[in-house]
Amino acid sequence: MAGHVVGFDLDMTLIDTVPGFRATLTVLAEELGVALPIEEMTRVLGPPLDHMLAPHLPPEAIGPAGDRFRALYPEHAVPAIPLLPGAREAVAAVREQGGRVVVVTGKYPPNARLHLEHLDLEVDHLEGWVWGVGKADALRREGAGWYVGDHVHDVEGALAAGVRSVSVLTGGSTRAELEAAGTHEILPDLTGFPAWWARAAPGGPASAPTTL
Image (cartoon, rainbow, N blue to C red; front, side):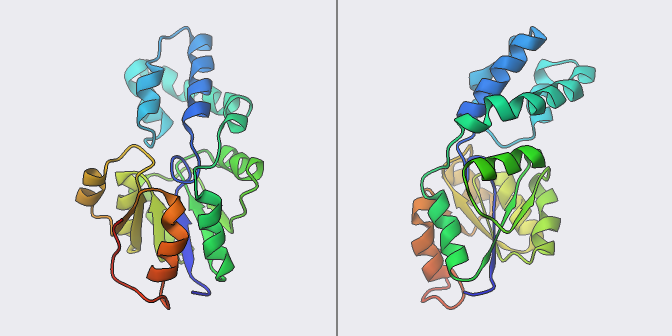
């Protein structure tokens, strides 16, 4: 398994973004004097922030609101957001076998870096502000063979890059949606990743797709 590269999404794959996202949206809504449907907006995370704000703000206000959200984020979100179960062990499983871990995320890169530093999660490369099929360039450039995500758009990015799509059920997409998008493997969460990686990576005893 040495030398293999595994890409991971960040929000709702490695970290539970909901509490911090909710807290930051609450402060933003108060500052803007706008009644944002915060519970609805945090029920399914994954799309870029501008897409989430678009139905609730005038077009000219979306960019400044996004900038303000990102400025508020380090104080209100980063300390509140934990790793999801199994995330640290999943990253370690790849690195322990001599592989590289790349995080490819739609999140603003400086804030994504703050999460990794706050949670002491060591990765080899971070690529931010890429979404859906836009993730393909980063995955190809880093030589990834797998991309692990929680959303149908993560599947799209993996397939566009020509890499194996591994999905977890910890985010906003259902098993049926992920299967319909064409993912190759589904895990309930990352707690099963180390055992799956030991079987599924080249050199392991199994190479066929695994759905748990």
